[in-house]
Image 1 (cartoon, rainbow, N blue to C red):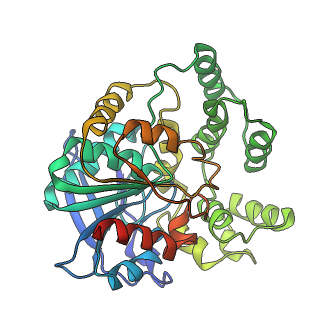
Image 2: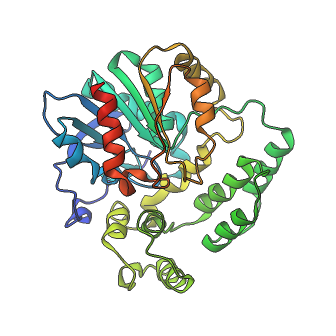
Length: 354
């Protein structure tokens, strides 16, 4: 496996991320060495929160929450998934899979021998982290998750499966604007898989995903006009996004892990491994869900309520984990760690200390 490592210089002067890097070296099943980055902040004798990010972000997503949690006496451990942040980045899209991420991060957990954890994961951090909890439950005291789930779709209609597979294999060109327009045209009766397949194809086929721009659009709402969006996107396409008049500190932070498009294989690949239709993860998902069905560990479900990515998923989460408690919705969209840091931190602190 060929592996890329982002130079430390890429992270110089990242705003509001003063945390010391900690690196763990793990071995993959084929013997490749991977370096996994995490931060460990707060009182060493305090309750421990394992905070896992999703796609296409890194532990920087928790930058606003960490001081709040630390002040409340919570120790925060936040890793970067392989392919993201300061962690190593396998160079081929095919190196990434749901199972590989579970294996890699599970090995990171075991090498560090972290115990007595409260888990919190969002987006892919939930999909991967919940599988880690189910595989190694004795390391965890409590489980919280936000804007995520553990997808299991054995009964997806065959016509939907065929449509998704044919679309992903097609030569259709999906631009950022076509992605947005196609999803807007879909109504409430559209199967979720036929919505998400546009995001999967866009990320898989787009060599230089505008990661900073996409995160800015969701977290800071800079791109309120079509003109601003078009100007910055065109500059991104030709590799000149840093001279854009709309380039922000947040964009800089989320583009920092990727010196050039070859480093972006993780963000390009991982959306296609979300099991929106039955795939190779089906049995593993079934086993993990069976664990939560009978687990008596305290479980908190936190959803924004205004997140178009995960709206409607909480019903499935509560069915999967009968002892789960549903927290009041706090708004803030998909990345509410950034947009609602005080509210989300308060919910998590109360859960940990209860």
